[in-house]
Image 1 (cartoon, chains in turn brown, blue):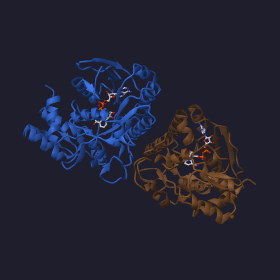
Image 2 (cartoon, rainbow over the protein chains, first blue to last red):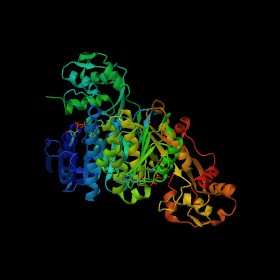
Image 3 (cartoon, chains in turn green, cyan):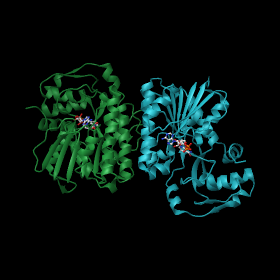
Image 4 (tube, each protein chain N blue to C red):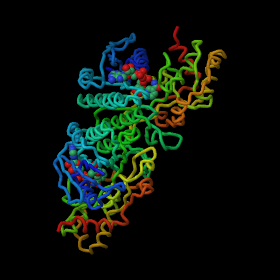
Length: 320
Length: 320
Ligand SMILES: NC(=O)c1ccc[n+]([C@@H]2O[C@H](COP(=O)([O-])OP(=O)(O)OC[C@H]3O[C@@H](n4cnc5c(N)ncnc54)[C@H](O)[C@@H]3O)[C@@H](O)[C@H]2O)c1
Ligand SMILES: NC(=O)c1ccc[n+]([C@@H]2O[C@H](COP(=O)([O-])OP(=O)(O)OC[C@H]3O[C@@H](n4cnc5c(N)ncnc54)[C@H](O)[C@@H]3O)[C@@H](O)[C@H]2O)c1
C-alpha cells in the first residue's frame, strides 16, 4: 500500500501523515511507503515505513505527472487555496482548486491504475435558497468561488470514478476546530482562536454573539474520517461518491462551556466579545444545520461533545 | 445590441439566428449585429442588420479571444459535443464542453463588459438516486460525462455571474423534437425520427414500446425560451442562474396520436416497433418527470400539445 498525500504539508495533511505512520496499515494492507507533496517539501514524521517528501505545485501538470509516476494505491488530495484566498484572488483559486485538481485526476486517468482517491471538499459548496437541514442530496449552490471550485471537484471525482479512472471518495469537511497555530485572516479564524488562545492564557476576541451557531469537527476525527473514507468499499458508495463529513452543531456558548468543563473557569474570562460587522455579515450567511446520513451509515463519526475537541487539542497540539 | 452565437452552425444555433433576424430586437433594443461562430463558418440567414459568420474552435483560447475582441452585449453559448460523443470520446467532451466553456467565460471576464450569456445545459445533469419529480433544486448527479461537463458549466456560469464577470443564464434543455434532418447515432434519435420519417412517407423504427415516456420541447419553443432567457432581468434570477427549460412529458403513444391528429392515419402505419435492448437500456435510465417551476414563473413556456410540435415541424422544417 503506497500512499500519496498532496497538500501533505498543510494542517490536515501533517496530522494525517502522523496518523498513518502510527497505524501502519490502510484498507487492511500494510503501508509500504508514504509520499508527502506540497508547494515546499513538507516535514515528515517518524514512521515504520519509507517516507518521501517532495515539492510539487499541482498547477504544474508536468510536475504532477512525475510526482505520480511511481504509481500509488491511495491518494489524498488535500492541496487547496482556502475560501478567503480564492475569493480575493479569483485566478489563484481557479488555478489550484480547479485546474490543479484536474491535473491530478488527469494524471491518474492516464496512469490507468484507478487508485483510491480521497478528495476534501467543503460545506462551502452549499448556499443560497435551500431548506434546512442540508443533506447529502441537497443541491450545491455555492455562493463563493471556493465553494464553486470544490463543487466542480466533486463532479469530476464522481465522473472519473464512474468511468473507472479513479476510485474516488469526496468528503465535505465541516469547520475544523480547534485548529492549532496562529489566527489567520479567514473569517472562521475566531472559531478556533476563542478556545486556543485562552487555553494558552492569551486574550481572544469573539466577533459574534454567544448564540452564533456553526458546524464543527475536531482535527483528530477529521483525520480518522479521511482514513475511513479511503477504506469504504466502492460498492457501498452508490451513484455518488460525495458525502458530508459528520460534525456537531454548536453555539459559541456551548463551545465555551465545554472549555470551562475541561479546563476550569479561567480561560473563558479571556474572551472579549466585540461585534465585528464585516465578519458577522460573512459568517451569518453560513449554514449550520446538516444531516450527514450517508457518512454516518458508512461508519464515519463526529466528536461526542466539544469537550472532546478541547481535550484533543490539549493532548495533541497545545504548545509545550 | 451586438449578439454572438457560439455554435451558430448547429441545429438550434441556426434556428436562433433566423428568429433573431425576424425579430430584430433583443432585450428591448434593436439588434445592430449578429456573429455566428462554429467549427466551420456557418450559413447566415437574411437579416435587417449585419451578420458575420466565422470559423472558431472554442477549444482554442486565442481564437476565442479574437472572436470576442469586438465586444458583444449578448452571447449564446451553444457549442458542445453531444452526449454519446462525450461518452465515447472522453477527451473530446472535456476539451469542448468543459475547457471550451471555460475559454469563453475567461475571455468574457478579461473583457470586463459583463455580457448577457445564455448557456445551454441539459436535463442530463440529473440522474442517480433522486426522487421524482425533478425540480430546479434537485441535485445534479450526472451519470454521463456530458452531464458532468454541463453541470460544471452551470456552476461556472453561476460563479462568473455572482462575481459580475458575465450576466449568465443557464437553461437545461429537454429533448428537442421534432429535430429535422437525418437520424444520427444518439440514443434519442428515434424520438424525432418516428415522427419525421413517416411524415415524409418513410419507414421508421421505434426501439422502445409505446408506453415509454420522456420530456420534450419543440425547436420553435426552445428558441423562444432561449430568447426569453436572455431577456430575464438579472435581479429576478435569485441565487442561482440555472433553471429547467419547460417541456412536456409524453409517451410514444401520445406522440403518435398527435401526429395522427395533425396528419391523418397513414404516417403511423410506417412505424415499426422493434425492441432494441441496447437503446432501451440507455433511455430507460433517463428521467421524464420534471417540474420547471422557476422558468414558468419567469415566462418561459412549453408547447401546448405535441400536435404543436408536429405542426411546427411541418411549417418550419419538412423538406419540400
Ligand atoms: N480546515 C478546515 O476547516 C477545512 C474545512 C473544509 C475543507 N477543508 C479542505 O481540506 C483540505 C486541507 O485543509 P487544511 O486545513 O489542511 O488546509 P491548509 O491550507 O493547511 O493545507 C493546504 C495545503 O495545500 C497546499 N497547497 C496550496 N496550493 C498548492 C499547490 N498549488 N500545489 C501543492 N500544494 C498546494 C498548501 O501549501 C497547504 O500546505 C483543503 O482541501 C481544504 O480546502 C478544510
Ligand atoms: N437538441 C437537444 O435535444 C439538446 C438537448 C439538451 C441540450 N442541448 C444543448 O443545446 C446546445 C445546442 O444543441 P444542438 O442540438 O443545436 O447541437 P448541434 O450539435 O446541432 O450544435 C452544436 C454546434 O456546436 C458546434 N461545436 C462543437 N464543437 C465545437 C468547437 N470546438 N468549437 C466551436 N463550435 C463547436 C458544432 O459544430 C455544432 O454546430 C448544445 O449545447 C447542446 O448540448 C441540446
